[in-house]
View (cartoon, rainbow, N blue to C red):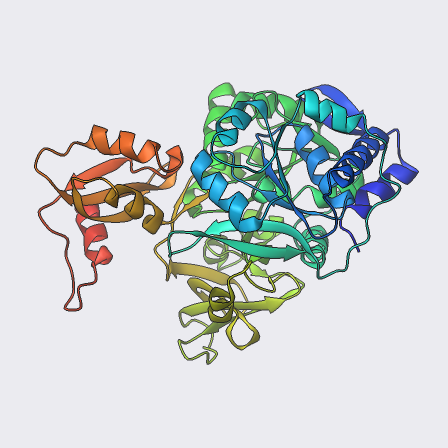
Length: 502
């Protein structure tokens, strides 16, 4: 079954219901949304794009994003949502690896992309886009099998190159239904505000809102502006949002300064980085019981555990602080266990690697059988995250077995930054680690061994030519050598200790 059939079904019974909004202006009803997706599917089919092909989305948060996504699905293609903050060269690599037939890009991103890729680029809002929406509609939504590719999500790996996570129609449906049961029930009276990137958690949460016939609201700013979010929530009411912890912190601070209690906010699901107890307690005290937490990763999107609204708010349970510091209990469609390195299950309270299995877990990585075999060993997804389960099934994250840095809810892998810096002729060695940051969770710091005249400004400019701006180091520490063990491996734990000692 094609996940996009949920839009077609909603349009059949409630064509006049408002669907796509830009701020306070309604741009399309569900009937018009459905018609635009059918026309886009017809245009894609005319270009030879059909079932099994990949259509990339390199777009900022605009209403056309959902039209492009559902149009591709209507044609039977899979979508490849790409982080709008990536460098065009990084995007070109993804397009090539995915074998994308076409990429939709917003006007601010299209120009730079055409210079680095041979994949056809259609600028949304441009003449080609208008012509596609004027094409005869496809006769019907293309049929897809539950295990067919629906969403190809690229998540960086420790090898320095992104890995494509195969997300199927079954996975998206299961994740959406788990949201309704384990996080929050969506109704037609609700509104989803998309202030976080649609290529990640915010975007993957659109399906249950389409199924319910809710409103899809895009901030005119195109991103996260605290005052704008508070205004839109008050206007639309019954608002659902996905936020990284840093967004929750910023919204709480802004609301307190303005004396606003978040009128219209119904549910904020937070994920994507560490949320400290002091921060979520402050947010709950100010906004009330509107928060829930999920834990997932690209390989099991949004679907490993959930911490309910009750658990986030409750202050009566004798272990409420421990529960608040956890990421909740296993979602309905998965099993979660803690394992030793040999795969043996560990008892409650012991720390090991978090393993997951169920219908939300990926079938594998795109064209990467070696990584697939390593990550899906023994029928379980080995998440690479360390944690422990208590006697009541609450999962607490302890550490990451990988060196991933999470800054502002976005994953940054040190190897990518290190490889970029090592291209500089004056850099001999480099090691990148994360340093705790009060707002962003972590920030990137690079320890560099190089020529004596090397300067941070030059390295910063060098990075901006090769990787996305958000990945570049926020600080450079120039050192005569990197600490290593007897086997020559850099001791990043020692580097983090140096940072913690100032």
